[in-house]
Length: 114
Length: 113
Image (cartoon, rainbow over all chains, first blue to last red; front, side):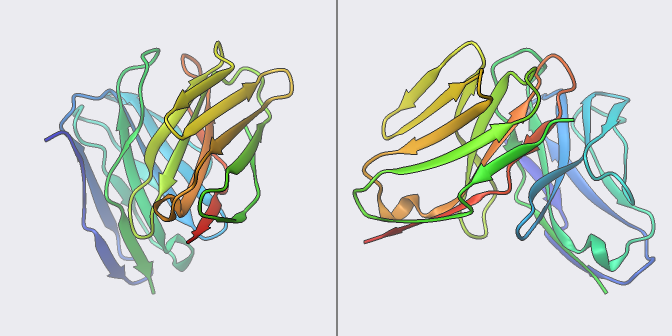
C-alpha cells in the first residue's frame, strides 16, 4: 500500500530535550516536505527536499533541522525544542518535479513541548 | 516570496446550496494551484488542482477556476452535502522553480442539513 508514515504520532516532551520525528514513504517520491499546522495559521512549510542530499528552507525553518540521506526517509530534528514549537506536524511526499502530481500527507504528529 | 490569501475563513451553507472559496496569490510565476480538504483529526487530502495553462477544471460537484491576470483562483462546490463539512486549503507553487508550496490559512465549511 502506497503511504507516508510518521513516528511518533503523539509526543509530549520538555524544553531543550532533543527529539526526532521520522517520516518515510514507499512510493519512490523524490520530493518530501515538512509542515506545521497551527490554528488560524494554516499549514506552513518548514523544510523541503527535492532529492537525496538536497534540502531547502521553507517559510518557518528556525529551530528545525532535516536530513535526506535516503530517498524514502526525511526526518525532522528539533535540537532544543521550545514551547512555541508545540504544533501538529505533517510530512508529505510527491513525484518528481515537472510531473503532474499531488502531495501525499502522512497522518500527522502532535507535539507538545512543556 | 509567495503569499496566499484565502477567504472567507468560515462559511456556513444549507445542504444543497453552493459554496465558493476564493484565494489570491502574489507571485505571478506560480503555476500550480491545488486544493486540499482536511476533515477533523485527519490529514489534508487533495481534492482538485489546476495548472496555469488551464482556466477551469471540474470533477463532479467540484470545480476550480483560475484567473492568471488577477492572480486569483476559486473553489466551487455545488449541491453541498453534510460530508463536505471540513476545512479547505488552497495553495500555490512554482513547479520547476522554487517548488515551495504555500498554503492559505484555510476555510472552515459547515454544511447544515
